[in-house]
Amino acid sequence: MKRFINLTPAPATRMMFGLLPFVLLVILYIVASDARLAENPSDKLLPGFSQIGDAIQRMAFEPSKRTGEYLFWGDTTSSLTRLGLGVLIAAFVGLVLGLLTGALPSVSAVASPLLTVVSLIPPLALLPVLFIVFGLGEVSKVALIAIGITPFIARDIQRRTLEIPREQLVKAQTLGANTSQIIFRVLLPQLMPRLIDAVRLSLGAGWLFLIAAEAIASTDGLGYRIFLVRRYMAMDVILPYVAWITVLAFLIDSVLAWVSRRLFPWQSKGVQ
Image (tube, rainbow, N blue to C red; front, side, top):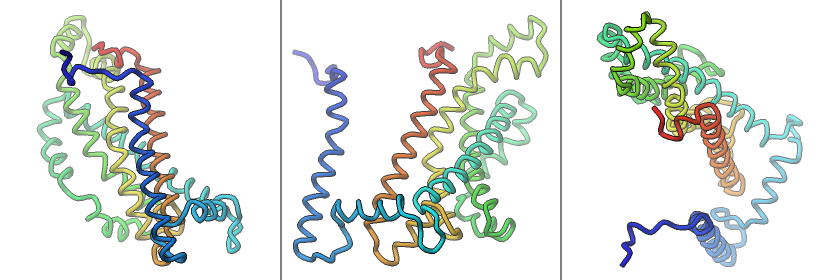
């Protein structure tokens, strides 16, 4: 008798199982929305799909009467720009800190305790400080994202560096490699795919810090729009924006995974 733990779904079955929860959620939403609208046609909590479609049409395909811009796409561009800059800064700083603290014991002795302490500080608690220091412009929002996820990336890279077999470093030194050659030609190539993995894992936190910064002090962006219309209980706008953020997060994660497979095929095959 085959045990359930050993059953592996076929690709088609796996896809069907993956789609099933989303189909059930849509059905549940439709049923709940129809029930509420039947009781109160002006209910705003669970708008029908026709109302959501009208909101998307208004936000994405009709220029704003006040600014003449397409708000949905303008918000998307602003948010992705802030997120991209923050993640790029965090990836670079995290890679440098993680590599140096993992490869050089003397640097680790100085920087590791500070990195540990900084990683324990709630980044959102620093948001008022960032606003005071950098003002309410773009710098403070990008800084919050970078500060929020840099410690995670740095500590992950540091751990990955320490996991690289010591024998590789000994062999490189036996062949005459100096410190910089070991870092750039032995350690760094092996850490780059790990860096992409760390960025993928930190994107959820990056979105959180982005939305928080935009909600508090911004004039555009996906988070700004969500918190702007909540005062009117405009769920027909909020729900599409939340769904769009989810789609963007999924697409970014998929692109990073594809880049990792293309640039580092040996990593996906488990080659060290």
